[in-house]
Length: 317
Image (cartoon, rainbow, N blue to C red; front, top):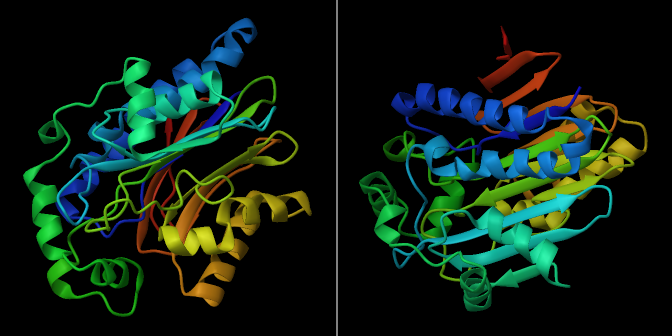
């Protein structure tokens, strides 16, 4: 049985948006599950398609469009990785593209490179049919309001990821919009994808963890697949996704590997975040050190999902 695991970002989110986010995360989860449950002859295509189908729903999932840079621009990062070949495609600081993970897939398939950034990524995307869209289609009034709240970048980082000092005035905003996915197909093939708009009020050109191999995602058929979310700078410093798979390779189960890695990140760099993991044997986990993180997975035709610590709901399909 194939497994597809997804996560949302670890934002401190508006209470009104929470039901929408759970609904949309489950809906995108089902899209991916349908794609990853095809015949074995179609599996190589479909496990990538499961990732792409999920990531295409990013705007619906987040309910709020992309977050904005300090100068009110949309810059996106994304990665996709094949656990069989260790091939990777990624884009960073690409502007006004609706589905950056699709461009990342093209980087993996059409170039000898791993990561394209900035104007080069946009030019490559345009050459392959992914032109820039009107940024107004990616920006909502909610995102503009967030930018006003988080105008200073250091304030944004502290308020989002310092659990002991979150100002009441910003406790209901999000400021972060990462989505991720890890998949195991019927043939034991593993893959992951992560996509993000970054963090509200980031400096133009800032690149977070999402497009960095071993930080925002990692997939290896000998171990498992991981997608992470949280404070990007902290995740990069500890190579969180690779840290998790390393522990899994030493015999840790998925849950313990994520928990230990998050504890390490907190103790070393005072960073907070979360991750979704699926191991080569189908062991799945969603762990986070922040107040909440929407997640979902399907196993044995049952939908598992949650958002808060200790929440694990199950529905029959």
